[in-house]
Image (cartoon, rainbow, N blue to C red):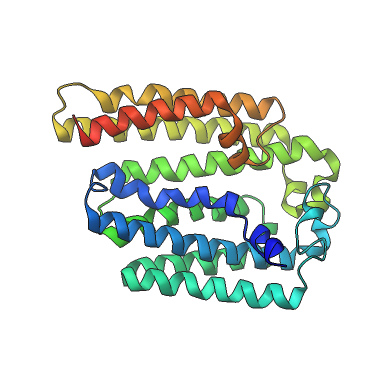
Length: 289
């Protein structure tokens, strides 16, 4: 049972919660103890509440998941976890996450509570509404960044917020595109909103959101460079690996991958190399240059 409970919590998805480190990391304060430990605690809190939402989402979707070629093996859909147990565990996780974040800072707890409410609304009804389903899932990533900023009292640039917003929308749209490409006409049986989408429409959204992500990141990078009076324009240089990583992900999508973005990022060596180069360049720009 414990193995099934942990699997249902989806620890592989916790990598998304690394976004709580984005705002303090971009400001260059993660080398200080207080912002660092607060960010770590909020990361744990977000992992708890996110796992709780996964529980409740799978409880609501248990009938549809049993028809899905992959989701039917999830612990709740396959019957490894009784629905009663799943409800108790999911509720404890949903409540425990915001309470833990509240201990760090009330504002951080409020952000996590908002995330929980939005995600529960998504699980019950809103995920069936075309476009709104994409917006709500994308907002979850933005709220992760906001939680980290709230916990460490880190101001967020407008361009930073836009970059995270459009970048999140790009990733979420890519996931829907991959699902529709893989399942075809049967996609609507596992996700109702997919009945309203076409590959061409989602492809247009991908191009628009990718372009907006690149533009907002460029403006954010140039803003940071001008504010810091850089000797070497490392913020500007960081644009190159960022753009290449986005384009690589587009290529993966067109080849039929991307249904699970976190798996793509963990397995695609090219994206990992671009990501590592970006981390090194941006780290030098913030903490050394």
